[in-house]
Length: 205
Image (tube, rainbow, N blue to C red; front, side, top):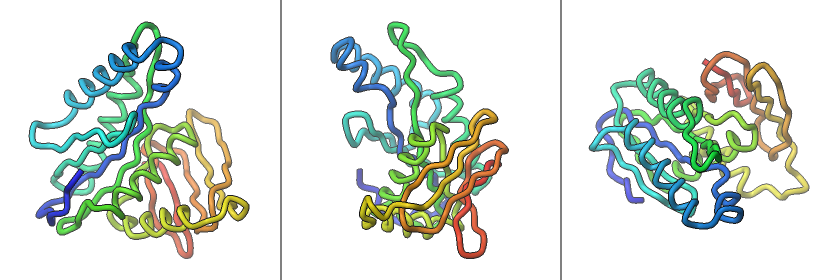
């Protein structure tokens, strides 16, 4: 994926993982896995526009880059894609596949390059780990999300102790992550990284 040019507008960078693909490949064969990937791609393409970037970057990982009007529109786009992929999840041979999405909302003039991709990837893994489907960093928190991704990359496993609380369908779970500012999620709608003094906060809007 190459998206190094400065964007003149707001943009949304989404790192998506197709959950359960390995299980389908192992239990039902790669033909079923390939069909699941095609179904996923169809779901994404029906939710994005012709000029949006959609690329496969790994066996079950994908990147989407979209220009949007403003930050609020970016949140709507992320929520709509999450609904398409997860709430209205498709079935392949009675096997339900869900997706985990890490989302960065980038202001005009931002670049979608390696550091931003790593941060979106980090958010995707936390959404996957917390089983919430979607985790978003707003524009004001992009740099903090990038910094956190670097902390996670550099932290030794024995030192991983940052707490993230996630509320999903009325339940809460706490997970140790890394030596970095704690993330706390408050139950509303979209899990969004916002700022508080001396820490990162994942709140739902």
